[in-house]
Image (cartoon, rainbow, N blue to C red; front, side, top):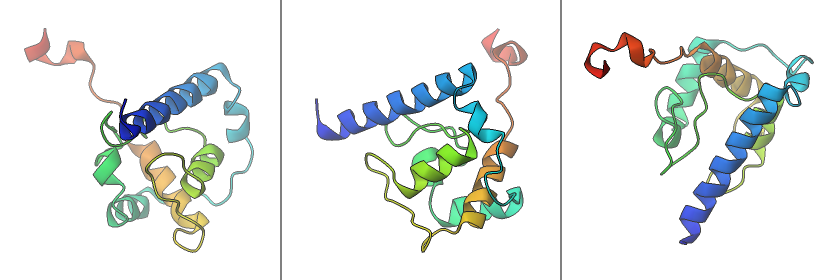
Length: 128
């Protein structure tokens, strides 16, 4: 297996594990605590685009198996999001506090939270 494919596989497994833990309530406990400043979704969209996050994670955080994991809808808890952005694994570069402030991270997180779920398969006539 190529090193890039292995990294992408590990990122995907980590993302799925965090989603599973969040749904079981293990990580959800951290989201009930004060995670810092509240965010502005409109500014978060601007920051997400200006830092090029869309290049790997898509314009609506949908992710791709070839570039980066899904971020939205229903992002991981803010504390876990901050930790990963500051100290990522795999191909993602680290975004230290000197590059992206805590407020900017909170804004990007608010943007990711604001993204709607895709329509259900049943609501798409072509797929019926």
